[in-house]
Length: 366
Ligand code: FNR
Image (tube, rainbow, N blue to C red; front, side, top):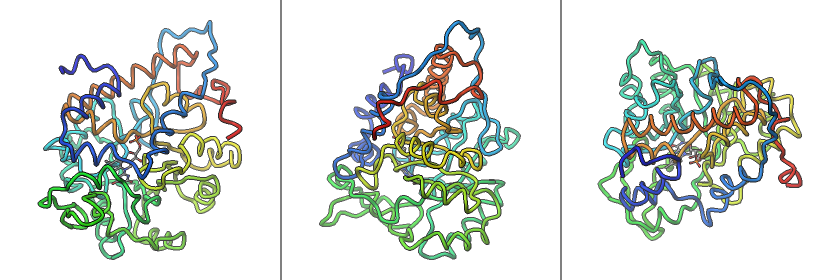
């Protein structure tokens, strides 16, 4: 269907399901075991109610914001998702171009299908577009050290270190569909294979990740990375607080879109848990969330609950099926939904967001 007929994130998803290959759909849409966390991530947004404040002048609203010191057109970012080439031959390159006009930051995965330098240089240097790098720590630390030096040399100032996948979750949809054995995974350089467990790309791709990376290894990280560090995959307030205590610059509350530990908490529960148990961290570091966000209104809810910006994983991959224009169109949709929600709630500037605009009573007993 023509792009003009796509008016929300679900439309993009429906088209992707029908048009991308069976294996790509399985890899992108899958989550671990019963997919409970993947689905609840999304459902819980519908259990938070707005508390609109009306009779305010809302003729002009602004979605401008900042993320980790960068100006952004709206408080969203592209969560790192591996192997964008499976959806579009120019994968991550095209995402970068699509994000340019609204200055939407792109977190490039260690498992991206293009080398990071190709992605960063695909947009004009003068645009100073915000790119961040997502690091999976390699069992062979010298590999990670080399990668970090390279990333730094490209002018990237922040890494997101993913901690929620010391081992990979059991993604059954991905296992069930045979992998093309000529596919080579980008970082480990391993070939996709079909074995007695199935054909899971996620499982093979994660084989280089160090399951013994711990808090104490942050000393090693600090020695090898002098820029900002955000920890991605935090799922309880104790770990979020520990990040703040360790002087980390940000936390991305995330359960990997439900792809690793099924029945790990929906992300909005983790956000509420942090608000309740360690509210002080919100002024010490930037708090981000991703997982199940599909509407501009969802973004606004997260911001009212203390998040600085909100990530989308799968939705960008589905929009990518339409190339650069699809990515741009998706951002436009979210921006318009966010502007509409802001005006209807009575907010004209995102700095006005606070918890008084949402009612979380249905979730509090959780
Ligand atoms: C991911 N995610 C991910 N995260 C990460 O840190 N490194 C990675 O390489 C990947 N790869 C990846 C591939 C695919 C196909 C998906 C769907 C996800 C997780 C991603 O960054 C993010 O946390 C979730 O996708 C957010 O959930 P939604 O928005 O997809 O519901």
